[in-house]
Length: 370
Ligand code: SF4
Ligand code: SF4
Image 1 (cartoon, rainbow, N blue to C red):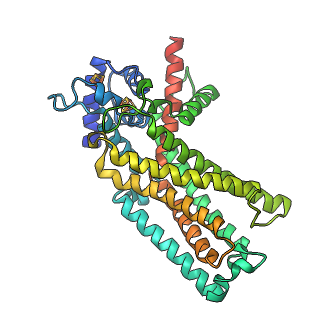
Image 2: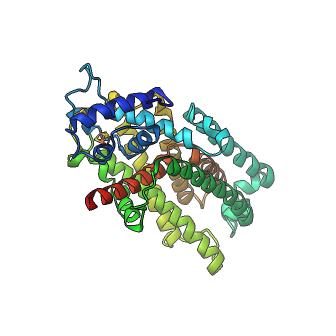
Image 3: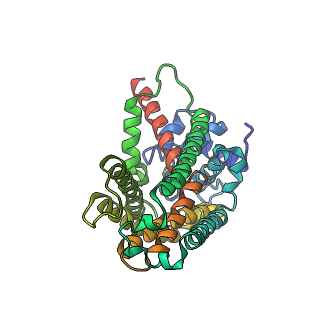
């Protein structure tokens, strides 16, 4: 079968070998999904690749992994296919090259937005106000009016949502494989939500994630949970603050015990601790298991989350000092870059994986029904 890339062709070869062997079928969702098919088109391979959590278990369990001549390395090849799928489905097409040299481009975008926010804040307010705004009752809004903040971040957020929805739509249409007898239903979505929220398939068949020393552990699951739930808590903090502002007429800054600050602080701590752990785990991983040509993409997204958490925490901790103005510009610049680059970053792995898990749940339902 013709394939779009060398990685897809290699993935087809490996899935054909694995389909004859089937030793790993209890390890994760990939192998049962593979067993449902006899041939592997590009869309099938993208679906399988996004089901894979790169736990490494099938590499360590495989009697055909290198140096065997069969050279079976499922985690690596599926990682390559998965990483290629992000760029292939990105919307708009003109921005698909963002996934090439992704780390460099995200760094440039972040440097630009942070510089613009810093320069803008000094140019519009002047240094005196920037360094004394913490004394003003309006605090943050003395430097940037609430309506300006909403207009800027609302526009960026809207763009991010549209780009992610369009990219997800492309992935779903390409890989969903309609089944008129078993259309996707709420039970599939709920089941996939559970699998994603618990990182069920990062468990390597129950023992944990394989790392450099081949001793399974759950380190990556822990750090990923801290990062993911930290992100959700920060999002919840912003949502609650928006409701306070528009429904209750209560303007920021809020006292330390109020819900937006509590949620934001807990979320920020998760966004600092989780990414540090993920970076450490990534550096310790056996190089054979990871697509090293795309490490910059992984590091860029993890660093963006870390920078968002750190600048947010510093802003809360030092908001009653003269550093508040500069920290506000830094935090807003980082968050703006995060919003704008999210559809072109590792963030999309969560979206595509969730959709692959939905399809897998549906396939399993059909399989069980016979
Ligand atoms: S990874 Fe190796 S052991 Fe596992 S199913 Fe494939 S060929 Fe068999
Ligand atoms: S690396 Fe883990 S999740 Fe990926 S195919 Fe192998 S066992 Fe499954």
